[in-house]
Each structure stands twice: as C-alpha cells, then as structure tokens.
Image (tube, rainbow, N blue to C red; front, top):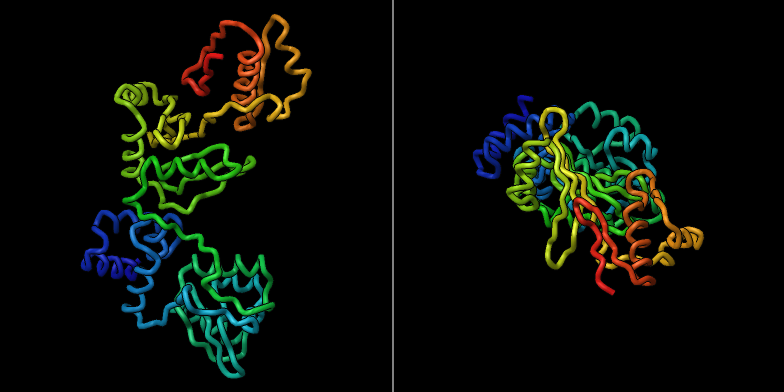
Length: 335
C-alpha cells in the first residue's frame, strides 16, 4: 500500500488526479486486488498511455508499445499458455542467450527470476498493463500460438476508450444497440453489463461511481420520477432520447441504498407475428373471447410478443383497442 500511496501522491502533485479520485482508487484497488495503475485505468481516471508513461518515468522500465511492437512466433511457444496467463507474462522475442519478456509487474523480481529459470535465458523485462497481457493472450488463443509473428497493432483492445468524466446516459444507453443485446444493467462499484443470450457481459467502460450514477439519473429522470424513487425505492419509466430511441427503465435501490438501473431499448417498429415466427395456432386464438396469458423468464420476448399480437389485431380488425401499461412501451398507431 505504501508504494501505491507514493505513486498516487505523485499523480496528485502532477495534477492528473485529485485526492478524492486517489482515495476512491485506493479503495477499489484494495477491494479488487488490483494495482493502483490498473485501477485508475478501469475507473477511467487515467488512460493506459498515461499510466505507462508515468511508470516509465518512475521506474525507468521500458514499456510495451502496442502500436509498433511485434510478438515473434518463436517467442509465443517459449511458455505454455496456461503458465503465461498464470504469471501474467508474454515473451516477445528471444535468441539463444536472452529473451525480451513483457510483465504486468516487472518489479516483481521473484517472477522475473522464475521466468529466467523456465526459459533458461537471461531476461530483459518490459512493463505492460494487465489489459495488454490479457488482450494479447486472448488474440493468440483465437489465432494459435507459434504460427506467425503477431504485430501488436492487430490485437483487439478491451480497454475503454472513454474517461469517467465522459460517461453519461447517452453513452451507456448506446450499449443497448449491440446486436443481440436484450438488456443493460448499471450498478455502483462495477462496470455496466449487457445481457446477451441470457449471459451478462461486462462492458469496457469506467467503473460506475456514485457521481456517475447521479449524473445518469439526473439525465433520465424527471423531478416527479425522482420523488417516486426516493419515496418507494423503485420507479419504472420510459425515457426518450431524440435521434436515439425509447428505453424502458427499472430503477431501484439495493441493500445499502445504492441505486441500480435495468434498461432495455424499445423497438420503434413493432415486428409482425410472421417475423417473430409465432405459430398460426397462437394468432387463431385472437378470434376468440377470453384471457390470453403470455409468460416467460425475463428477457425472453414477452413484451415483444404481446406487442406483435396487438399489432396483428390492429392491422386485421376494426376494433377500439385499449391497453393498460405503466410505463407505455410500444406505441400502436391508428390504422
């Protein structure tokens, strides 16, 4: 912790972060068991390039350049992939006597000595971020190890391209435009997550802080909706962003009073029963009198199915249709 504080104090003195950011980063760093630099990147307080530049000046270590360096194919097979993932290292190049190896922690001299022993060569350590190591290994997992040289500018990066100050309602709601995305969850203390095929996938955005959450809420809730949230600890509403779309929001307080947002994007064009692949047996029920129940687990298409059935009635019959919804999700126009 002492080293983290010293680095943090340097960052504060340079004016790159303030003391509040440092305290928060130290708390998250301890909780997530991450190094301070990695935490500052995840929080969106500093960029990866900024962190590497600072560490280079503080330690004198060479830093990994993802724009111009290459991982040579013979170096890719010097260690088993499992060992590289475990030790958070990647050999970049080697000859018979020495090897250049990227470390997520090049100042861990025990790890450096272990790599020397495992590859039977002297080692020149290169400083890399954990994200760089993980992204390179993920790329090699997909393409294969030792097949060809890997220019690092071809590696798809998982680091965020947005700073914490830039996170707002529009930025997070855009995540719902990902193909196959059926829902978005935003909670304090972690990064936003989207639901894809029933699974939650964390997004490459800064960790949501109380400040970020308050900013998002101020942009999506009216004064009356904020009152309802404070009184009932939950509110459901529809948010309209001109030029982007309509969204259904369920906002509630978790244990401890922290706010969580569950959101989904509403379709402007209601799909037909044919497009959804609904069986004709189901549409035939619409000619009868009675109660039709549509049920399923969350995110499986109940609301879309009901909207398509109502749209079918609206398109094929001359009727006065009344719906009871709060909030209103799908808008059915006169036919």
